[in-house]
Image 1 (tube, chains in turn green, yellow):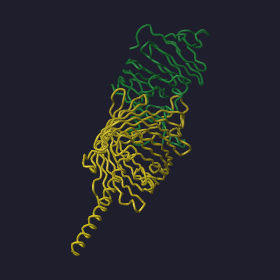
Image 2: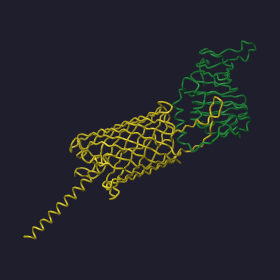
Image 3: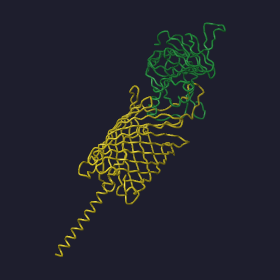
Image 4: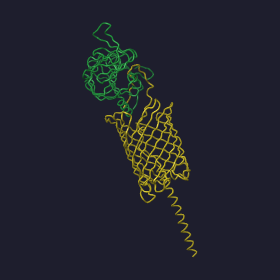
Length: 227
Length: 334
């Protein structure tokens, strides 16, 4: 659990990031996010094109990617409306992670990428992790670094799981590379990559895309042909 | 009387011939032991056991901030087997590691090494990952200079090692290896040893194309070889400690590996009772991948040993040697 008088404190800003009061209709509802100025819980935080920010809540790091809309209804819940974000915690926490259509509860510590899906669910991509993820219909599962999960529908369940190339993901992720300070869990991420390299059997010539429906997941073969 | 003289002459000639043959044989044995004494033995370098991280960023594909998500196939238990074969043909200026006149006995050497091993799983130890390895190798060593062909030998090695990789880039290893040299012509065991050792290694990026690798190790060579001096078969047993630094630099498809190592050896048996050695080694290897599993290499090296404290004399074990040649290698992992 995130304890105490935890505030949402911006620690890095790039481009335009705004906070929006959902209970206010007027122009004063929208404010530019400024460094070290806490953001209210229940306010939406929205990043523009090529805009990113890093926020700190009680030593848990949240990084918002470009075109991302996120809300913290309370200290222990994060709702991802669109876009992608990183959650990085060195200590054990319990966090409710929701998207437009799906809900889950994470218990543990680690570095996780969350990406919203067109179908209202989300991708849960742990880079390195010690913990579990629970959904109302899918139960609780142990998490493994590099194994991506799809969380779908409401009541939520787990879709297919995919082991993904962590080295490629890290090299190509703006959530990792577009921020000046490295994440404090880089050593553990390095170990997760090392374990993956030791266990590697092969790589598919494909990339995973969005999921327009709960039943369909886009798989892009190299060369751009969509399946 | 005449028959006694003839007999005496015969005995004298036989004695002289016998003494000459014995001296030649003893000389060969000493030269063999000198060659053995210069052979570098140790546990395999952990960096050679790990899969080389390839540049996998060619396929980026994704416009999302998340990054490219490429599905991969992983082994369930992390048990890996690996096999390699390499052949090298190279010049060695001082193959018998001798000081004095015999340092002129330069030759070409042809070696063939078959090696294999198994990684016995991947175990999470909190802030590190531990992997046990077992493996072995067999190497043929053929001197191309005709006179030296009697020194041709085959080497066998078997090892068990625990490798612990930490997230900060350091790795530690502890293991034991068994090595054995046998004369190729005589099929007699010239040397054997059991070598328990520990080591540390750190690899870190100096730039996008260059990695620095620092390595340190120490161990004890518990050896058995011919007792030429009638004192102890463990005459070549020694404690050793080694530090090395190397670079791995990529230029186009080529990988350059310059390196330097310094080794200290302390002997405590027989005529080597108070002998200490310092060995400096410089090396350069250039590798080119012909296919993913097959590579060509060119290499050069210089070794200098400075020895003191041997009962036989301070300079008798000093030597220097130049190596240079080419090789082909095949690697497979399962």
